[in-house]
Image (tube, rainbow, N blue to C red; front, top):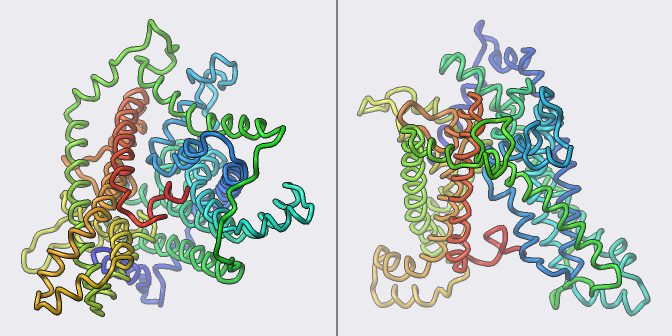
Length: 543
């Protein structure tokens, strides 16, 4: 309910009458504005362009790694999923440094833009490219999952009939994977519509506004006084994302093909030219996943932009300055505290709610579990607006406003990330044997005792892995924090965005490298605790 009630209030405000009392007047006035229309069409075009990038890259990598028994498939799969694990503002900053005129990676090759020429990523095409890359794993995961479901008998029958690997791919594999690819592409569109980090770092300096950045700039410039108009913009964002998600369900129901159980297709055996796709895949992943991080690291190690990277210029000066900055130290402390509290509370709530919903079969708990998705599926900018609307006025009875405090950030994180823990815990309790709980109930154990002594220990691995996923996501979160932070309550994501926005690119790069190292440690920890999750819950489990 931490997400649903604020969203309902926001949508009610968006549908309010206009200044002269006309029905839906506020919505009509907002939609008729030139700034809105420009941002709307930019959102639509950039999201559509990003879908093309996501689909082409995601399908190509999924087919290459799923059809060919190439060495290092696990590493290749992890690199293909890396854009999903790296915060969008860090990925955007890495690509900015890679494609800039002072790029330490491209300059020695003569491929960097000439000095003085704008970075080519500061454009609508740059926004579309980077959003497409960020959401590519959604298509990759969907296609890989569909490939792993193809029966081996179906492929073997085609081989016996004399079909070549190419013909089998065209006539059997592609028709069976296209529905999943289409569903993944639509999901990528829904994610692109609500993306904030990439358009903020690329679109704002490139004067390419989209709805999420227009909402941010309006609130930043005019404050909560424009909440009505930005609520109307937020409603349009939600409708666009909801339409995409509805289309995804239609595609899955209409085009999905039921497949027989049995052994699954494991890919084609290596042939004479099998080394060629392996080399191509590694080159693509080197370009997409490795070179941008190298550019980010080299930028963090030079004293200023424009200084060539080398043994004589490289230093830890930017890292030392970042660690000496009280605002950055405070941002780390705030992010760790908020992410840790959100993860711990989500784990506790998920265990209780999942047990009440699945084992105790409480209708109320099932209803709460169902509406918990509300804060997760809507764009983060929309949820942040809903939190401002709800918690800006003083709360009843206590007369205190939560706006401008750390509490509103914590509530927003809980409303956003609770399903990350709740769904794995529900899956774990559904897969568990109910006989133990039934025996305890017959022996006279009460509901609380059964939940604490029987269910909780069994669900703890899934809850801990889900909580780690929440912590990893919340520690570098930007979309909610950009609208809800206040002085003294900065977060890591906000600091990176602010430093880059103010022109301190080397400092932002150093902070991004530290945040990226933290993400790497969390991924390793999540991989360990993720063994308690049901198969397919974590993205890389689909591999």
